Length: 533
Image (cartoon, rainbow, N blue to C red; front, side, top):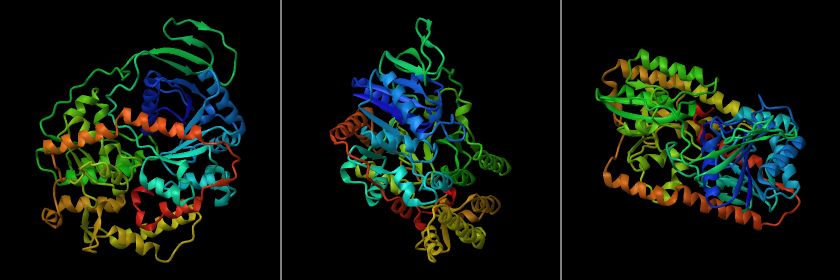
């Protein structure tokens, strides 16, 4: 098969890793793959595919100005050039997230031309991204949600949708996407230390200007167009060449491998650090890159220093050998309140480490159904309401619900706040509330109370992250992950989806999914987490 994969960029991140996995798996099976993106990757050799950079595919704020029709034409030309012919199918990531306002129109143009499309939705603008949704609503939908749905959720037999988990699949079903056009495509699990490339794969990178052979270094003239290409030989491996740094330690390290953005719930990591014994330290691996996230992150760093908490931030930046950093951990931990897929629940077992922290049942239900044992994780972390200003918290929750209803064009229901509050407080003890439902202000109130009141910890259910580290449990979970979620299984699922897509007839695009049904489900008040607003 000739396959064109499309994404805004190939910088470090979850979708980029998914694309790396897909390229490696498909190339190993003999398929011809091209990846179209808006920015050149830092490590093009990490992709077992031909890469074409189309600046108009980037994020809206910095992409080249090109309309939907022109972008679609540029994508088609780049794909033909990279693949040696028109693609058999297009695999497009997050087209409806609102990060690029020309891409939905380009996708619809491909659909109307009868091109087989797999639209993989890792994230939804309807799920806690009101600014992105509002931008699409105003620019693409003319402030009409029904019109916007026609632009971003086209339906026809040759347009299929892939989701990461059963929850998103259920929501798409409720929005009217037919069973035959929906697929669950869980990510493959592997830490970044694992080589992803097939041996001696050639990578062609479209960078513009000259045609360069990476082995011989010979430049040749090439006709001008949307893109030009550079050739490189790629060997197995392809990891960054940083020298390993010393990662020694004299304590138990609870390691949180994440980029510390807001929904990763860094305050909860500091909660456990506040309660830690002298033998324990907690650590994160990466600081946020988004400028909007950095002031919040800086506030946590400052608070940890002020309260003298045993926390090391962005440890990955100081330890050049990520595998050694992982191996140095006593356990891995996750306190996230929102994930698209949840690799954090799968990957620890591959390095024989237990996992502690917060469970996300919406996400982990799929893993549990496959036999993964996550019984040590907690779904709630109750703290007394008297430790914080509950009235102010309710006001902020009410404001967040009001802002969301405005952003998504929904009518505000009178009982929304009561529903959100009931979901946040402890059902058995309404005088306690889940720490993960709090915003930064309330979390800081709790941390200060714990640090200044030595008797406060007696009101908690536990003072250390629950952990089940039995060798048998780790071995069991590793077996499940290796059987269900490694690269070979991912390839089989992906090829099966592609075959189903290619077997579907092309037809006029005359319908669309119900965008309002998606909003109603993602924006249910019971799902309110202030860290995701």
